Amino acid sequence: GGGVRDLMLGNKPKDFDIATNATPEEIKRLFKNARIIGRRFKIVHIRFGREIIEVTTFRAHHDPQNEIADDASRRQIRGLDSAHSSSGMILRDNVYGDIDQDALQRDFTVNALYYTVDHFRVLDFSTGMEDLDKKEIRIIGDPATRYREDPVRMLRAIRFSAKLGFSIEESTQRPFDQLGHLLNSVSRARLFDETLKLLAGGHAAVTFEKLRNFHLGPYLFAPTLEAMKQAELPWGKLIDLALENTDKRLTMGKSVTPAFLFAAILWPVLKLHLTQPVSPGMNRHQHFIQAANQTFLEQLNYTAIPRRVTSVSREIWELQYRLERKNKRSIEAAFSHPRFRAAYDFLLLREQAGENLGALGQWWTDFQNGDTKRKIQMITAVSRPSKRRRKRT
Image (cartoon, rainbow, N blue to C red; front, side, top):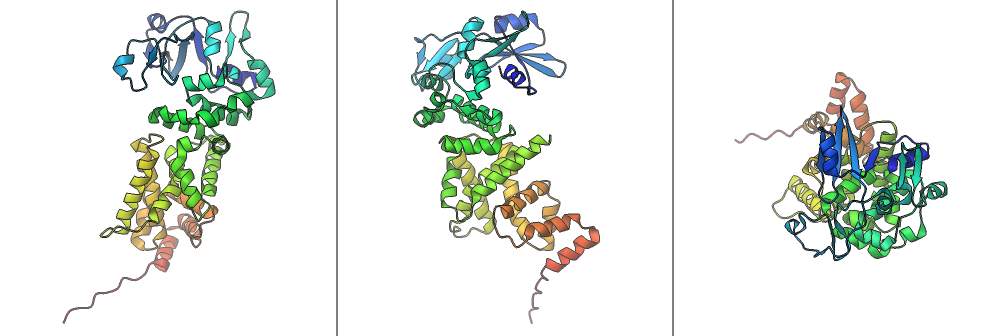
């Protein structure tokens, strides 16, 4: 798989997967610290200390007779080793075979390379080595059929192309326009996981560009792309900057948070909702909450976003308004907030993208770098004295 591919390219693999002719149940009997996971595609996790070794059983071709209605329940699928929907999507992939058959079930030729300790050889059952030399991503089998089996393969083609710097072979990319809509049938939770892989792999900027160029972006970020068309400011630049910064952080070995990425990607949608008139009886903060809720609801039609992510994205957005309010209470509340640093970085992105905030980013930079005395002076200089109420006579 990918580990062999990366070794052949001279890169350090993230991990190694093992494939065997032993069934998941046989593997579990051999290793006490093993457990079978997954229903659609059973694999075995074997724990060695802190490491988890992922072991898969060689797969074979599916029985074309096991067609299940698109609206079938889990109960109807339960117990089946092989099943696919009427549209061709694989619902169960637990038909086992030999290594030759397994190679044909892999997605791309460069991922269908096997290293065996039998004479220490690399086995190539397709054109994997040739495509590595050509720097091409090529799907195994008929592209349309393979995408119907699993539409996420289109996203994986984009991801590997961006990660490896490879082109996508012509027949592999040709069905994207016609079959991209199949991504609508993939679970929103799985699309969220795939989105994280696309954006948190160190090549987010080029990946986002490829998603748009190959017209697959609307199946993940339709609200954002639509809002960008209507925006007065170039919010696309803000997103590009956020993705580029994410790539730089990963290159430096630093961590990244999905919440910051989604805060940037969904910012154009939020700003569009905030331009709508405030409902009667609603204050500015309530209007913001309503706009943020609507933003997340629209995105949930495309990808699920866990609350642990949306809550942090919401805080980053909300702090933008606190950072803009120059009074003692707001300044101290913003500076002491756990999400201050993320919100400050987001503020700088807004300015870099062309939003005129009156050198607000520099003010907060100076404030952070100042000592206690300097902070007090800066707060005093910008705070307006409160108006005293006149005493009634």
